[in-house]
Length: 581
Ligand code: SF4
Image (cartoon, rainbow, N blue to C red; front, side, top):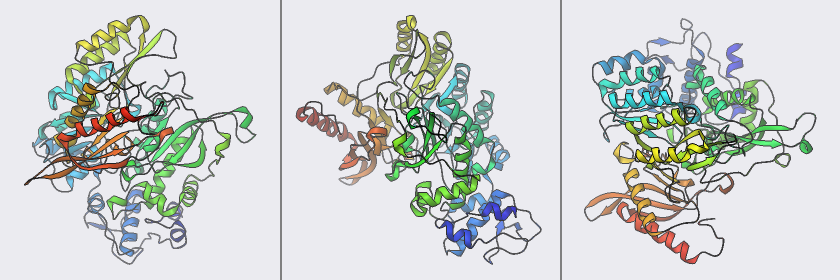
């Protein structure tokens, strides 16, 4: 009965109705499709002598459905069935002690622990952490800086999920990194591979007078929910969750698989079954690399309901996601296949109750975004206090700078350091009278609190300096573009430039005012780095997918090409006309 209940609503890649009516149940003898299902590299069979756990049942069911449909599971799915990546700790430590890197599909499986062997770009590991809500304390940041000096490249990268990464980790240092992270109360489990990635929130949570609700505590609670439900690790592909409190700095929730966006129900729109107050609008299926934003579902949730519903959504995705084609394995494709209504019905069935649907006309949606609020000094809602947004050129910071910032946060702030999805960081709770002193101290370590209109929204992925998928050196090229623009123009509005190295779109080129994606360009007998240049992307109120303007522009020509675009705009714009929309 329990199996029946759990598998109810199970579909593979499409139709819930079909799945519910034709459910093959894994029973004590034989396999649902008549094929022999194997677990653990063929060592065991589901034949009555082996009791399958729930995740195993799901995996077997997916395999059975794929076989029934004449499709083959992807290499990664097969690898996960051969060996549960969550049980690889001993193996990873032993391999590190022997000074070797993983081989074959173990490279993929090791990513479940946050370790990415990034050869051939670099013959070393990259380690991605989980920093829920993007918040660390000074002692942790200092510890991470020391750890990077000892076992990685001596610097730390801030990612577009308000997260941190170490690079240049030799094989024999991987174990030290994993142990060292735990020493500073940071974990990396599930930061790579087919997992729910770092949960993000509005970076000014709790200090922004315009927000409706604090969201960093919610991201932390979601993080703990994930860590403590093992079935949250059985996904067909990666998954993103964000909370936006409706304040000045966007969490880019509409680019996530699940976005929770704070809205208000005012007393005049309240009723007996919908009390006035703050709720979260549920949006689903964002994946801008595939040109889609998270779409509204009409579902309204209280803060406490978000975890249960997110858990339900993930469980339905685990059952319905495509495990044969990695390009179609994200939530968006399940939604495209099933439609929102059927998908939400499956979620309701999963969580055992109806979701609250509320017409948009009853909601007040805040429009407080200030695209410059993540950089420079700004007043907090707490009287007499300010925060500072420190600019980190394309998200990189040396260990020495990290230690100095930790000292500043401890001495002048409350010890918190907050990373943003804009690849920079914020130090909150600075007394207004200390602003000048803090500014001087930040400049003294080679960083800045002010950025040009081009640099404040400059985002770049790792690129060919450290990622094997990259077609170009994104970070270096992004810096060259910003420098070229700064030397020629002064702009009265922020322009976001997003430079991404490949179709994975880690720097989300489709939402940039100017978005570049790396490609190779033929020049004479050589293939050189280049980009396709897009214009007109946006998020939130200005939501839009950037359109292709120029193809195959050689990387070294990009600064000039983009300067021509900006120059053309400045020359011809009409009064009040913004750059792209
Ligand atoms: Fe690597 Fe591509 Fe992501 Fe850039 S976008 S970091 S090149 S996977």
